[in-house]
Length: 224
Ligand code: ADP
Ligand code: ADP
Image (cartoon, rainbow, N blue to C red; front, side):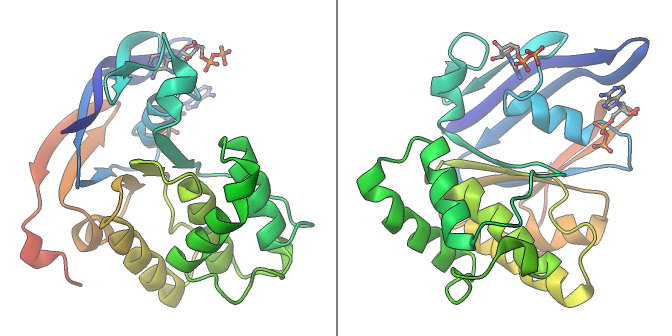
């Protein structure tokens, strides 16, 4: 089953071509890694895939729904953690996630259960009453992933989720993302090859806005 089908995605910023005629397909069960150096076009691609940035050219369908023609319906199938997510340091984890559940259209009666379930999936069971601003960077990233799955979307898109974390936090977040793969299809960006190898089932290498490599990763290498 194809969940995301993007064709010819192109984005220009003035004379800069950030992403050029990029094709991307995400199938159910995949953890797809976008690998490339800073400035390669990963964030721009993810913003277009999530409907947060209009492409200069090209088309994206999420579960067959056009992101341009029916953005609300298409976005319902997606969860997204931007590289620089908005922070709400003065909210508790529970308050923040309940707020995000509302934004994502989770019915009021279902929000507490959605919050509990997302916290369980992200290892946040004990910190619901803590202020987001008082958590470590690693736990703040868990909260960021929790908001991305709060409405149980089939597709979760995570932009550089381990940047700025220490090695132990990195290991924990990678494991969390691998575990997410059991219930979600995932797109993850990184500039670190071992990270992609440890977590992903397929890698697309992006250089100067173009796909230069697109292959599956041998599952036996994904255990580190
Ligand atoms: P990556 O996520 O791989 O680091 P980006 O998608 O952030 O790459 O950037 C791709 C290219 O587009 C870079 O050359 C970057 O400088 C440029 N770019 C990104 N966002 C903007 C913007 N808002 N205005 C102008 N140029 C931008
Ligand atoms: P702006 O910031 O200029 O208002 P938006 O990012 O809100 O632009 O998007 C403008 C339009 O482009 C919206 O109708 C949106 O749904 C559509 N759009 C955004 N991203 C994509 C995409 N990846 N594929 C197709 N249409 C898109």
